Each structure stands twice: as structure tokens, then as C-alpha cells.
Amino acid sequence: MSLNEEERERYRRQILIPEIGLEGQEALKKAVVLVAGAGGLGSPVLLYLAAAGVGRMIVCDRDTLERSNLNRQIIHPTENLERQKAESAEEGIRRINPQIRISRVTESINRENIGRIAGESDLMVDCLDNFETRFILNRYSVDSGTPMIFAGVSGYSGQITFLDPPRTPCLNCFIPKIPPPGGEIPILGAAAGIFGSLQALTAVKYLTGQSTGLENRLLVFDGDHMEWAEVPLSRNPGCPVCGSGRKEQSIYY
Image (cartoon, rainbow, N blue to C red; front, side, top):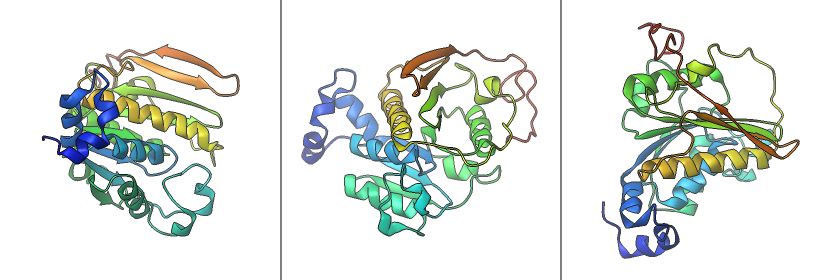
């Protein structure tokens, strides 16, 4: 997809980045990205991918906007309380960049509909708040070969990695069981902003043909002490999702 003059001007400063250039910007224009969740992580992901010129985004969120969301879910204005988050997010995207094509999904992701929801996507960005749905995304990633960007935030801190099995582990390789529910998670909006921004940066790098720099490593930020660390990741040969222990029917998909 070639760029028109308006698009060349809009994206001029990022086209100047050698690793993107005109070819990379055209790749962004033709890309389709599923953003699963339009909350604390999804808000900066959606805003920055729209600003970067990703051509089509599938915005998936079943929830309605609550007042307690507003400290971190910056795509949503106060006047949209009690409206569907996916609908509210679509309006926020259009304010940033009206040229983006948007597919809005207001149903829960499950084993039966994940193929229909994600089937046209080149990349999935996991901005979810529960591991049950994350593991459905993970199984679909393994089955379809569609990479996903995983991130999670709590308090001041967070973590992120890029998953593209078999080139990398899948989520189940290093989180073998769904963690038990722990109640309401404390979170500062700025921490979600850091990791949502990193997810958007990772998405742009992948879609423009670059190494994300997050293959086979989990990048971790301790916001209490302002320290970064990394954890090497490797595939589990016996993984029940992507390894020899794989089962055709599992709780994950």
C-alpha cells in the first residue's frame, strides 16, 4: 500500500528512522493488529499504534467503562462512563488518526471465537487482565503462527516479552499454570503507560521487519527501586501447548 501525500507528511518524522523508512511505513499501513483489551495497557497501545499509522486494528474488549478505570485507561474520557470500552476506544483512535480502519469486538474471547476474531491479524497484543484468556491467545498463537506481545503490570512494576513459537517459547513454557486469582490488582497509570508504550514500540519494530529485541527474554521493571532486569527464556520441550506434551484438547484452547 503506497502512502498519499497527507500520510507522508503525517509520518515524516518516523519515516526518517532508517529502520522504518518509506517501505516500513507502507508495511505499517497494510498491517492488521489485534489488541486484546482496551484498558490500562491497551490504551497506550491503541493510541500509539494509531499515531504510528497501523492500517487496521481489531479492538476487543467486552467491558463497560467504570470510574475506577480512569486512573490508567487514558484513551477513555470521563463522559464515556458506562459505555462499552471498545466503542469508547474506537472514538479515541479516530480522534488521533481518522485514517485507521477499526474492527470493534465487544464479546469475550473464547476457544470457539478466537479464530474468527484474530484470523486476519498479523500480530496480537495481549493487554488482558486475566490469564484464562491469555492462555487462549497463546494456544491460538501456537496453532496459527501469529506472534503475540505479552505484558503485565502491577503497582509500579511490570514485564514484557515477544512470543513467536517455535522461534521463541510460548507463554505456557514459562507460566505453566494459570495463577490463582488474587483479587483487585493495585496499579499506577504511569506504569501501565510504560509497558503499553513498550508493547506499541515492539509491535512497530516487528511489523517493519526488525528484531524486537525481546525474543527469548523477559524484560522486567521494578518501579519501586527504578531498576531494569531481564530473565532469559527458553522453550520447554515437554510443553503441553507447543512441545512434545501437546494435547489437541486442553484447557487453554
